[in-house]
Length: 105
Image (tube, rainbow, N blue to C red; front, side, top):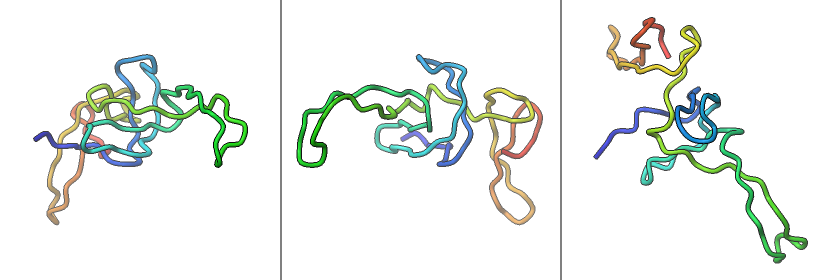
């Protein structure tokens, strides 16, 4: 089973799909499907019928998920999506560092 190394509230950049090269924050991660919801990206329209909660019905806009293979962690110093490594500090805590510039992510 694959590990999910991204977390909620991480800044990421989309590397494939219709939202390519856009950045945003992860709002939610679906672990079973390996998908993430990114705030303000991948907006889709959903047509709804009138019901008890929504009297009028109509067209709603909502965020759709993006597969984790299509996003990368964003490094603000490098200003692009980067690969990262996990290192232990002297206290035994795990830190994610950019492989290019070495800044803590």
